[in-house]
Length: 414
Ligand SMILES: Cc1ncc(COP(=O)(O)O)c(C=O)c1O
Ligand SMILES: N[C@@H](CCCC[NH3+])C(=O)O
Image (cartoon, rainbow, N blue to C red; front, side, top):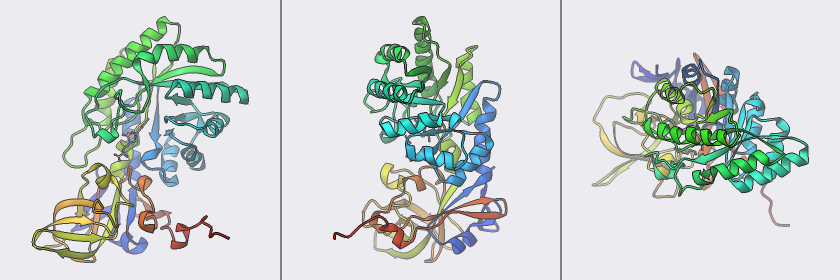
């Protein structure tokens, strides 16, 4: 069930009127639905209910404390890629024992912080990182739980910028090096080998690449067993896609049952790191039309939201649905929806058939993941507010930045 629906021509977020929220909190504005976040998380959790598992929500998709807190209350684990994300998880009430730490460039400080908090596992991405983690753990008198992120070299069939499982990508350890680096990890006194990990890319809409990756990883797990290295968990990463337009990605239950079928009677615990599948369609981005303008070729709607707020269209040519917050009768025109930032690439959508007047609100759908978290202050634009709706209630979960916050910490020369 979708929690962003029209009623009498007005867009609702759960039971709240989006236009009212836009007036109250100002635009541009992110709005998230608690019910949708919870439904998506439960869909994953239920799909693997009969098998040992951990759902580690990928914090990078949406790291607002209230979002993390909603998931922490459900018992979610978290996939993090920085000390900053770890501190958010802790602040939001997440359990460090359910945290997996991914990322190619963990610093010594980040390793120390995670070891002191007692996280579930480090997803190590190189031989050099393994050596460093061993030293840090020994210095702290701890044993670091590790999994190695192996690159299964499968083509995820997604946008090149968000594909991660190919040899040419910077992520993970090459399959041909896996056994030797696992053997090294097994020998090092500051480490305990727990798992294998992979993540082949994001916004995958087919199940086959996941299964191909899994076959290669299970074969590796068998080879490791022959070397006396027993693997407790298999972290399948994230990457399950969502519907932005007319894509039909597998639902979490179909995806999980296909993986479980491949797993057979193995007792391996499964770890999932979904980000987009939980957060994307739990959020919209609301912006107001400032001006309409046109020439003989083109119509433009200049809106108050821009690439600094929502960069996916500019960065990946990503297509996200743009709908009016209040439907109006009249003739549609073909608009490019563009923001105030001084870049030709600053657009939220192109060639959209809409009937618009200045002052209208527009909602960019599927903006709950990689929306606010990828925002910036480019052009010295304050970051937008974020609101979470919960039934009839709306909660301001992040205030709009003030202008003075933009230069906080900067100093004039003496
Ligand atoms: C290691 C890792 N895990 C999980 C995710 C989450 O991916 P998604 O949002 O596509 O589920 C990512 C991002 O691609 C990632 O790099
Ligand atoms: N940020 C990307 C996905 C990258 C996922 C992180 N590895 C997007 O918006 O689609």
